[in-house]
Image (cartoon, rainbow, N blue to C red; front, side, top):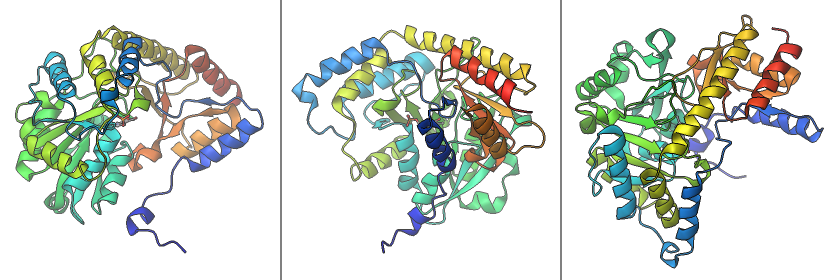
Length: 388
Ligand SMILES: Cc1ncc(COP(=O)(O)O)c(C=O)c1O
């Protein structure tokens, strides 16, 4: 009998297990399932990035162990990008370390920063690793509800003093997954003041920085005065450059935290494949037209899906960023019962909101990562087959 760690035993059951089981069964029976469940871009990585990767893999200098610090060229490319894109100055020597995707950063920053029973405030609904990451570090995630009336921002004033006393870190991210919200008013400035007052590290998850619509341009948290004193940002190439499979990102910001993260990482992995670093630098430094094109593509899918869902009586609203629609379920349904109904009757997968935390109850998430024809087909099936 294997004796697993409490840590792993405490992980919640994989919430999509039941859905995956049903999907596998129906697909095996030849049923055509449309998945709007996961947020994995369906269009390819830009050609110039693939070309840079091809050339890099042909250079034997890329074949050896990388370092956890990252190559000077990669760090410089991130610094140049942050200056150009956000007017944020980063020291490539001390304020940037590569990540094997933002997800890796979320999990490992918990190990670098949390001790047993330390509290990590986690946006709810939120990316699931905001709560499982603290668990794996023996810490304790406390949900921070994102309130629709506050534009899906948390009410920092409402956090209980007993929780604040134990809180060491907070996970938030805008443009937001799953709600599609973008940062409003002076939230980042208030977050910096909050972090200073309570001595809490802000971890801003910037995975959707450049996936925005209607001319909206998302800021970096690090643009906020004082942010670098209290926070780091997890930057990802996954969504802007269709590079989810490449595992490429960076942790940037507070140098002490970046250094602690690096020290941890020297004991975990040996860094990012140098060829991926070169390709990532090519993505960040090269033409950005593909990013604009991608935003246009998602924006037109967004508009198509919002109109179609409103046409069948669902209260879908167009987000200014991310690749998701966050839609309230019809009366009488929970997020799980509606997702199940749509799967069983229309062969369409949507994500139940409760999978992203208790405050996700009452919503489902539709991903925009399938072509127009499939989105239209999905809505047609829901209209024709699902009794709302
Ligand atoms: C909010 C959020 N953070 C992080 C990630 C993971 O990104 P990466 O591919 O860089 O690990 C995702 C992926 O969907 C995400 O939605």
